[in-house]
Image (cartoon, rainbow, N blue to C red):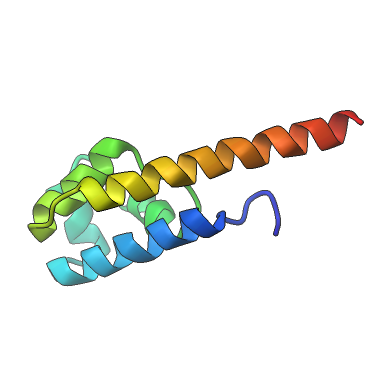
Length: 95
C-alpha cells in the first residue's frame, strides 16, 4: 500500500459515500451545487483520495435523507487509521 492509497477504512468510507451519492441521483456537478463543497472536493472524497470533513458527510447524508451517524463513525475510524499510518511512516523514516 502506498502512502497516498486510502487505508481499508478510508476505502470503506469512500464506497459508502459513493453509494449514498448514487441514492441521491445527483451528478457530481449537481452535488457540488447542492452543498458547500466543490466538484473537485467531492471527486477526491468519493474516490478515497482525501477524507471529507464532518460537514461534507453531514451534507451528503442530509441530501440522501439518511442519518449521518454511521458515516461519521467510518470517518472517525479512517482518520484514526490515517494518523496511525503517518506515525508509523515517520518512525520508519527516522530509523
